[in-house]
Length: 547
Image 1 (cartoon, rainbow, N blue to C red):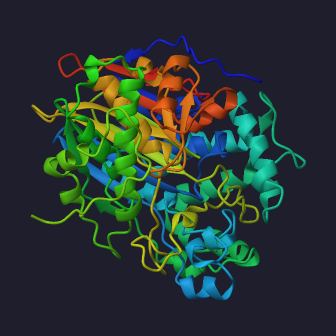
Image 2 (image 1 turned 60 degrees about the vertical axis):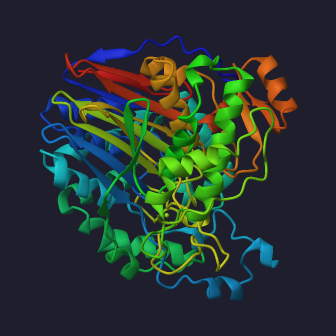
Image 3 (image 1 turned 45 degrees about the vertical axis):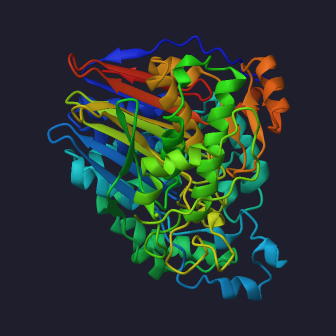
């Protein structure tokens, strides 16, 4: 496949007993199987996450991290799960300095993105287990059964996944320790070709029988530590045994009568809320959605949000993150004044918040109205590409997001969680707290930008979930205030030219390059009828399906 046309021609799907939207149809089917068996949205989410590890290892897996937001229909309460891992106890800035790595501003070499030092403790397995322990109804063995079956029997690889698998073979798997385990004789599987992963089936079966301890202690943990150390890293079995997920208070902001919920730092959901707070002061609905005037305001709001986020977001156990102050409407009003409606500002600085602080996304809503917004990621596709011998999964490279500047709040430190790009989103109605719906857009620093753009499409333009996901997007590529802006095929040429005249460094992205703009999923719930409406991003192989 050489090109990916923009127009999806997909309809939104409707259902009452449950809806799942994900980037792989077989993973959607796995989740629906669990819903049909009486599982909750949490059970179905973990079944989907595990199945995505099988069918889309190019993006996700048990060797990565996860985050989740869960809406409990019976109470209206929203819980947030941080399933991200921490840096090894033996990994320090001093160690990296001795080996020639450090902050580029200090004249040192940056840490290569696939180096074994970028491996943080994989948090996904504990996250899966903790989510079903709190919100699930079915035994873990039942929930993981569809993924185990697919890993053992094999599955036909989807076209877009096959494309990114081939890129991952060249970029990571071919050179990483153990990476060839996830190939067929050294190459990627082709579209429609059956791929079997007995090693991953072995891993998932061990977790199904022994829970998270089977992953963080014993043979799997020993294999992880051994392969990381053989590749030049320093992760130990003690680092793995000491891992815990954390249940945290979600953060939120109001926007057009909705309350938008995100996980707090160390995740970058704060960036989406900062941008929405700024944009709330503009009449976006009165502007054409793909006009230069509207896209300019959205881009500039995102620049300001990144200026704050890239400094303030860090592990709150190590740094004071002034979240409450950053989300104040008065702070947003001050930041809004910095936007020139006619000209791009590429040198925005972070504000002073003072007191008066390569990924899969999917979502599930069950028939009772419980909702799970879930994201799981290796980072950079296959992560490091390093595979523990015989266990069938790659290890993430989330540690690459640490700053190597000792003065930065996100500076690397032992036992610290890095700035995290993966973020689930969820919306409730401000008037009564009822569920509006879970949503998300995966893809590195695109994620808060995608969150902002789909919320605007839903709240300002009243689009259905599928139409909101079909709309072409922009992306500030490096997630910084001064970054260049990629514009997706489908944005009018006149708008592209006008944004360039305003001073935005722009380029137009087509074909497979459109993966840059993320892959989203949305499910909305009608509060009166309970009818669910779902959409799935045309930039991926997936779909939304209903019971």
